[in-house]
Amino acid sequence: MDKPSDKNVAKMQKYAEKFAEKSGSYLHPDHSVTETVVEGLARHIEEVGVPLCPCNFYPDKPAEAKLRRWRCACDEMQMYKYCHCLLFVSKEGVPITEHLPEDHEGRQIYGLVKDPHPDKGRAMRHKIGTAEEAAHD
Ligand code: SF4
Image (cartoon, rainbow, N blue to C red; front, top):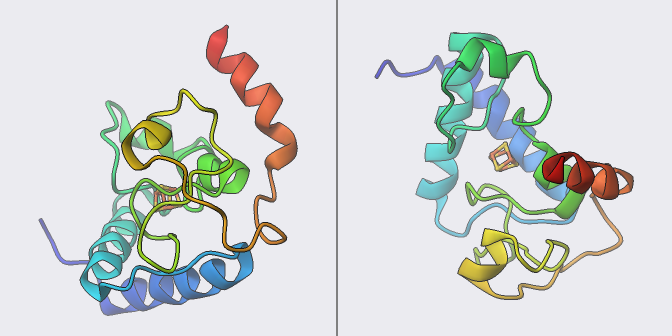
């Protein structure tokens, strides 16, 4: 796989730092975790023009890139403050699961992980009901 440009890596690193602060989450204490995810996001900027989440498989990447749901920060992060890539986590480096539905895989994997700053982030929390209804349609 080609290495993304330093410019795009720096852009996504800066974005990650800013968004962690804004959303009331933390970057992973192990910097190599952040580095890997940031590189994946930067690579997607070069491949499809937007920072698609690097931790999913997309049967049709260009089509997915036209949607909002898996552009970082994805809908799950904006609704539940949950990042399955471990880019935005608790201080201890675990994904925040407090706001997830109980049957979500994140809850099953990590148990209940409290939101360290419930006053921040989750700009799309008002969409939770709508997204769940759509998922069950
Ligand atoms: S899970 Fe969401 S917030 Fe986390 S890196 Fe992927 S797109 Fe970004």
